[in-house]
Every structure is written in structure tokens, then in C-alpha cells.
Length: 299
Image (cartoon, rainbow, N blue to C red; front, top):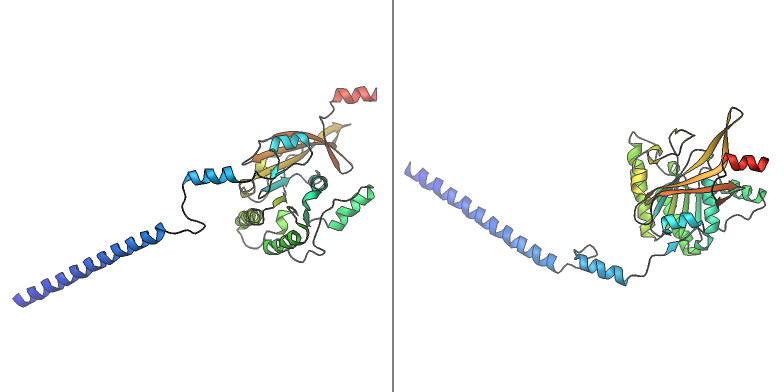
């Protein structure tokens, strides 16, 4: 019996010794880890805010991209590289035409177009039929893919060949996989990937998104974006176009008055509305004529 007690005590002591040894090894391991971390110089090293301040002061000013639409430029303080901009409107409200006009205004940045919904041939033909020169832009000769990976490969090609800084994608639904029950999660993933491309390649990306069935007689909002709330959350800027509607002779008529509504501006500029008038593919900033002014013209 006494021997059993002694054996039990010895086993207990052995366990305590092993535990102490493991504790000492663990402590030594933590010390070594701290020593390694102290001299770590990787890109994701921890730095003080003061270094961030110094970096900002030494950095070159951001390139500000102005459209020539004075009120819109003042509102946004210019677009920036590495931004993802969402443009949306009801069907046939002029969002593609608006971006085509913008493409002409920003042609010095050698934009590339991914026109999945309406072919580039159709877009260019419309310009030619109006007697207008199409934008000096670029596009894949054939749309051989519709994944983010394929889009990135064409962006890189356009950057290498033409020094492209701006990308237009029409529209989001064509590059979001439709399979499965988590479509809204795939939209969020795709939006993050597009934002990643903008930062990775130092470009400005415009992505066209569709709206849910919204009331045609009122300005749509971010809540009307179709697919996922992440569209408005993941972008840097969200611009929603709306064409004014009037009743004439008991019928509803869509006018050429367009409200360009900046409804999200994450970092620069502010939100607000800019009145424009659409005429033969071109958009001009101007106040809309009132019913009284139109009546005077007719008189």
C-alpha cells in the first residue's frame, strides 16, 4: 500500500515536471516570437499614425479627373483613380448615353469599354447615325469572357498597350455568376473584386447597375438598386439618373430633363443633384424650363 502511494506521488511529480517544462518552453517560444516580430519589416508591419501623416505629406496630390460638367465636378471634387463608381437608372433613362458622353469628355485617359448588354457596334453606330464622332476609346474585339478574371486580363492589356486609366462596364449582372441561391453574396464578392482591381491597377472603374421596379415618377434611391445592398455599400460613389416625367393630354411623357443624383460619395466631395438636359446623345448642365417658360415660348 505504501509502495502504491509512493508510485502515485512519483507520477504526480513527473506530471508537474512535464507541465513546468512545457510552460517554460511556451514562455521561451513567446519570447522568440516577440523578438522576431520586433524586427519584422513586411508591407503589413504595424506603424504609428505619425508615419501615415508623413507619408501623406510627402505623397503627390491625387490625380483629379474632371468631366467638364462644372456643377458635377464641383459636387464631386473630381473623380479619382482607384475608385469604383456605380451608375444606375431605370431602363431607357439614358445611363449608357450619359457614360458615352462622359467617355468622350475623358478620352485623354484612354478608356476601355466592356459593353455586355448592348454591343459596341450598336453604340458606335448610334453615334455615326447622329453625325457624331464616337469616343476615342477601346474595347475587346470580341467579348470572349464575362468573369472578373477575364475583365482584368483585358484591362491589363489595355493599360500595357494604351495607358488606360478608366474602365466602363455595362453592366454588373453580366459578370456576376447566376447559379446558386446566394446571388446577393456573389454580387458583394464581385463588387469587392472590382474595387480591388481599381486599387491594384490604379484605375477608375464605372460599373452600370440596374434598378428594381421603382416608381418612374420619382427619383430612385440606393435602396432601389437591384440585387444587393452591398452595391451601394462597396462603391466609392453612386450616381442615379432620373428623367423627368410629365402628363400631356392625359398621357405620361418622358422628357429630356435628367436629374443626375449623387447619392453616395465616400471620401471626396458631397452628395447632391445636378440638373441636365439630354439632346442627341449629349448632356448639358442647365436648369429645366418651367411650365410657365414653355408657355411663353409657345406664345
